[in-house]
Length: 217
Image (tube, rainbow, N blue to C red; front, side, top):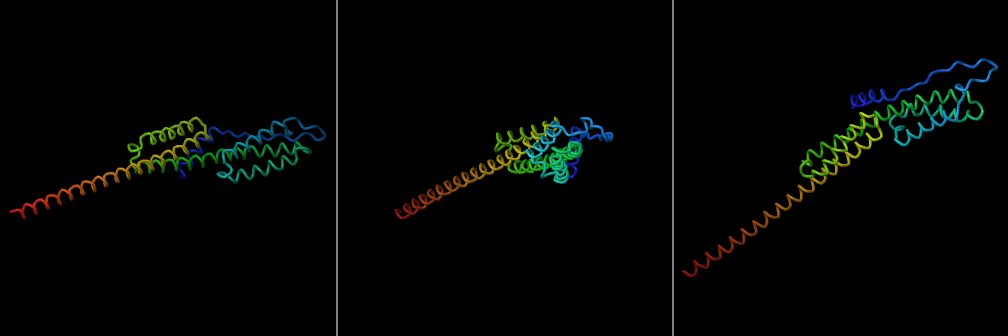
């Protein structure tokens, strides 16, 4: 599991670049340059990151950087109307922590979802679902491959969705295969009982005929 998370983290780190350059303090008595004061655009970017994290449930997978980012964001909101220089500094500190939440969160979430899909596939294979529930198994396998492709293309929400669909599909195929096997077993048992009952009747008739024939002699 640790190796899986590590591999995912490396790939995520390559696609999620964090930039947080410090800015020099303004000269005393001068108005701070625009880049040193919080702007509506900077605030909007921070809010977009927060929304993205919550929509994907990443705060639960990377709670520590998220909590730190939220502290900076709350302070930025509080200072935004009265001290935009302070608000800017707080937002500048929050953004890389939000990025880390996204990177670490997806790394753990994707590893978790892939493990669940692999486990579900193993259950389906144990039930011979690839043959007994061919269509359901094939659909689940397609979702699994879609998840792998999405990951290589850095489409992480789609990766999560793909593995979730694969898990559901493999579980469904395993259930279908088990039900079909049980139905086939029940049918065979019923057939055996029917044959046995028929044999018993034939034997009974044969016995009766022999007894009758014996009595006639």
